Image (cartoon, rainbow, N blue to C red; front, top):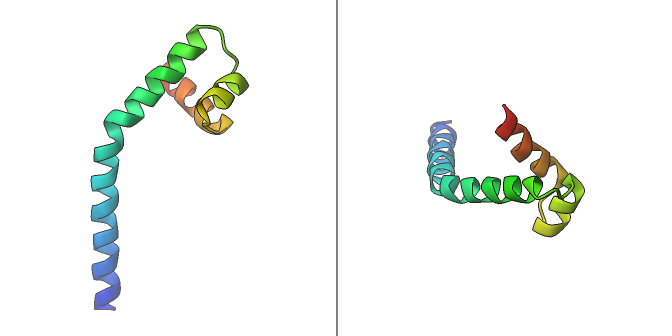
Length: 66
């Protein structure tokens, strides 16, 4: 069980580091989605242009209005 808990701790540490490293890129993607939305593109259109899922597009747009 000690190996299990050690592995769990390492997984958590890696996830936290990865999220911190990805944050600036996530912000750039969010800003791009918002810009294309402001230009009048539909959510489905944004998904098609960016390759993001419609769910991700909706999440980015709803975060901006929250």
